[in-house]
Image (cartoon, rainbow, N blue to C red; front, top):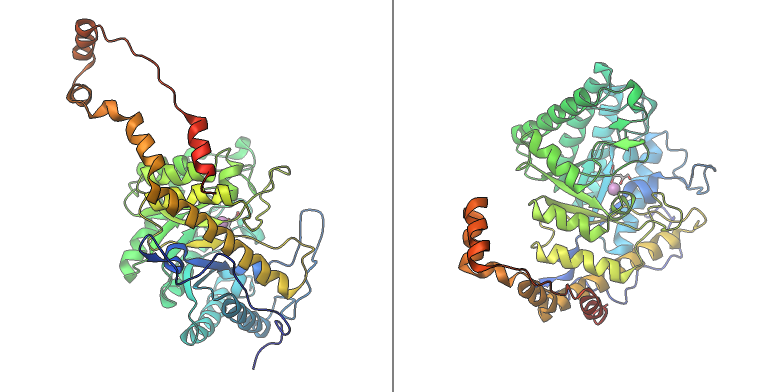
Length: 424
Ligand code: XUL
Ligand code: CO
């Protein structure tokens, strides 16, 4: 028996995504590892900063365990219509907020047992779990960075419960996004103390992961602002510095999001390249922002050239590993129909598939890599390599002795852009 929510709705059809098609020696499904985000598709009710609920669903209002279970039934019906290999959740998406930790824990355990039963007969696995420590008013001044130690304690207990639930469901990653870990005004903020608390909190997460034998990755998700004026996990480079400062660089990786990169003034491939160069590429949240409105609109991706460059850097870095492509994307609030949920995801999956295929073709052709090798070829000479083991005096002597005078060379950007254009 089904919920009936998807009655009359067509299953996803694809023009480019074919899970079994082999790309660079690997099935497309195993490259892309698509995940549905529970929050956008099932928990969000269509509000924006100026307007209330637009979606009216049979599992609304979301304040009751019976309806939480109906929501789970609908979610798994959708995963099947999409042939989705993974999903992701926050605790607050899957169980109603109870107002105290003991009841939140009980309802989380109950609903994750229910999800576990559903997963037994479904192909859809858990890519990651996370705690929503930004929506409820208790988090308004932060979670681990809150000036109130009681909030730190509530956050620690909440994260423990969500790590336990993720572990129970065989989750492959655990994510921390610090939506309120930052500040509204420096006038009331001790940044150094807050960062030390955040560092210690993350170390406790890593210690607990090892204690319970969780083999998934711990990921932090950069975002520069929104909802806070400033967030400490500003971008990939800021996170890398933070992780090194607290000795977590070998324990924690990054979950990078397209829209967050744009808010930070970067391209998505920039964030991926930074993470890859630090050995910290963990997973991606795929979406896009509206380039005109300038805020985090979490739209489904539809720009193949952008997505192609993102997967180019992912393929170059060796792929997504235990990570995946989570659609941290929501419908427009006027897209009311159940069919819209299917069409949005199917379209996003097709865009990513086209991007992956273009990226793979560029890797196979090798044109970008050849150009890169040529550009840095000078560093293959023994004299150039010796410089890096030398010192300023030795280098100066060589510059004088050999009369070294650099001859500027073209970066050939337009030719490279033309090259990329052949594939996308
Ligand atoms: C918010 C965002 C979150 C995280 C998980 O912008 O991206 O949904 O992905 O908390
Ligand atoms: Co995200």
